[in-house]
Image: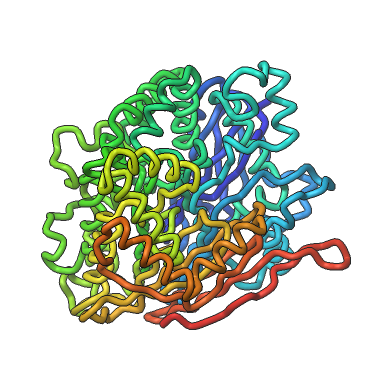
Length: 590
């Protein structure tokens, strides 16, 4: 009899359909049955000895929340008979009731039940406990996980012991993940946590990777990549990281319509063992990152979410460094401006957005991926003065706006590495870049300015949204920063909203460094450093309007009509041994 190894994870939802991800312990037919009669089923597919299914569910009733159960070969496996949690549900809330979007990043694996937690309470665990205790209370409509869902280079003691039973940790990569099986173990350890498992079964999720999903500072520079490729372990690590990401995270980002036309998904499912098919895809993604798109778009009523790959899509050549390759940058512009008349400069066709599809860009100009006509999808004609959306969310794991000193140091470092002060400074700059993790948007100055220009354009003029928010994590603290453009005032409220970690450490050095980084003294120091690098003035200025806040935390945006409200909550241990989310800030954005 087939058993449920991991899941279910409720991934994509809209008004009438959903997808539910599961991992079973053997081949089987996975089925989801809802209390209202909606259902779906599919056969599992096989990758590296593991069995998975992404079950499409159709026939859901808009504006309802229906309980569901999971069956494998006709036997119910979810919910467990001894579950202490409320039934998992698939909710299809009406868009006019508003959209609650919770987000954060950087979740290190939770310790075993009852074990000591060296990094403090897990914000996702604590959120789960609150929802379970009061199912009628407001819950997120979607959870955005903005990177570092697993840590391939910082494993737990339990995983280290498990790996040591398989291979010699004295050989590279040592006590880091080496292959697909070890990646599968990371996800198993992370998502089997009871609270998180239930939370992910009942709150839809959208995900994107960051560096630790592969390795710290993944794709920092061309020289870094050359050094990694010279090792005898990197290729297997990277291919396994991309393969496991596609299975455990990216598949669930796609809609049922997209899945039905995705050639890679079809090839994997049609094969008795999809390992070689997926490995070939990952190898092509490694050899030619521009051939694959991991970024994607989701529309929640009149809220548009663009999840942007700011890791694999980089151009690393020093003379043309960019956070996004030309095709990716064109795609982002197209999605931002889709529905704003002819401002996008491209013809947007059918389909919600193009995903990580095998052959997606072959034979087509860069950026020619199709996307939905937002006016059609949301009931407003393209170019209508009201605009295609009320709120634009750009999810990028790395913050766009950083503390001013950090920004200026990264811009200076980019100039040094590009040879602005000669070969000696370039060599020093590369050492500093790697040692200090200088690889955010500011380290790609042309990309930073291009994003600033695009955001200003999106937020200005007829059809402008009420808010444009850049959602990020990575830097192990939370803050709000608001930009301004010389001689230009967008009609939308624009903000950088950064929230991390969900569950990780925040060393004293980070606390002190980022507090100082936002100070006036640091800003003056940064300007001097930027002058040494002959850095051009930024196209945008900004100020911190909230934070910095340190702790395991999660942010929630509540978007209703053209209003937006932001909450930040931190997970803290209570005297009775439980944990609770404590409100840190609650403010109107628009």
